[in-house]
Length: 285
Length: 339
Image (tube, rainbow over all chains, first blue to last red):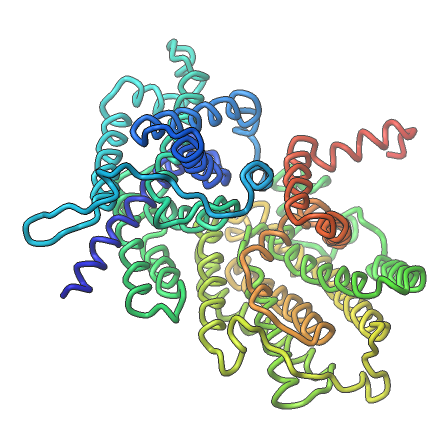
């Protein structure tokens, strides 16, 4: 019973981290049709920024996190404005190769700057402790991760479906020519959505630093997991990504608790079965 | 990857449907044995010129064969895959286990590797090829990761993370023993590569190969013309699996060790990079890409593995921003227009 509860809580937290990183990729992939494999590198950049700010610069965690997210968003915006926008109309394979190359360069740069060792983010006392929920005590960090994941899901869904920006984004994706004629600032919308995706990736990198240790190869190591979540959830579907992330995160956590000698077998078997059952996404028929 | 002569879609379909009429066939007139023969000469010359680099040269031959097999899937059939290492690795493990437990003859082992690769492709292809595009890509990743987990789990057979070792190959054809310098290994790999390169070229230029190219260009039209799309792709995937299995078997036999890295995601991704670097769909491009990439890797990685990432990352971005075809055309124009 105790193990089951631990699996559920850890799986939920792991799934939320996967979701926060994956949702940005899902938006760029599904709505902007841009295959961005450097997304894992953005998560790494966010995590490294937070680690550096809290440890070396001795900033407070609550101040370092927004600054690290903003830095990641800025990196995403600059890259989009300078290079990536020229690749929107290119073939998928070109996009894949360019962004993989970008990840490689970011990995090498990270290693040159920070070294190959694992980076730790210093948590404030509030998060380092545990919280008594009455029937059970839980690490506060897990609760923050789960809460943040739910908040991101709600905010992302609300932005895309209910706000003017979301309308602009969907219009720009469906028919950029018409949207532009109607006075929608296409370039700003594209750049802002890309930066928002990068920011979310950075946030996910910070949230998940305890579960997915920050090291230079982070960018590639967890990229496959994030891509799996996006593929199973269905590209561009926020609710689908959430469902896929929680489901796969729980499966991965459970297999680590109960059958660690099988490695990631169950994760990938589950992925293959889910993808074969619903090739267009978990929640789409 | 539009075919230069097949600009009009209907013409393209007709040309693919009736490949036997010489007037309609592709303008590539070079006989299929010329490129393999050139490869044989160039390979032997390389072996003779750099006798102290035979290990590296052997690795180039084996990688070339693996990328050739990938080119059949990605370049010819247009199926982007990131799980090709599964075919290579299982070929390698099959050849290694065969040498350890059954028989140490290299040619028999090569046959076992080929069969293992082809069988893996046959079984996984029956599932994978029902999907297209991004779903196919992700499913190939899943299949290769499942294979990797299973191999890590089956420690009794594969040695798990420690790798499979402890097997020694018998002399080739009962006469040429594998020496420490690697002369026999290099020539053996080269001959296998040349033969399979010839086979691949014959396959690509056959009516079957043209049908697969047609499916790449327009799946719906080929289906409408009566081509059994799934079966053609399935056969091609199996052939590619056989080639990848052969490459894996060669790797196992010449290194006398098989590690789990032969099944890794990184190997699949690197092979794809090599293919794009050399130009997909041309077969020779696969060999050029494998050679350039392996040489670069060897030079840069011997300095610092992270420098290597800088080099390959920069190279990848450069290839996309300045596509090789465009660069070649520009160079040719500057050199005086041999067009």
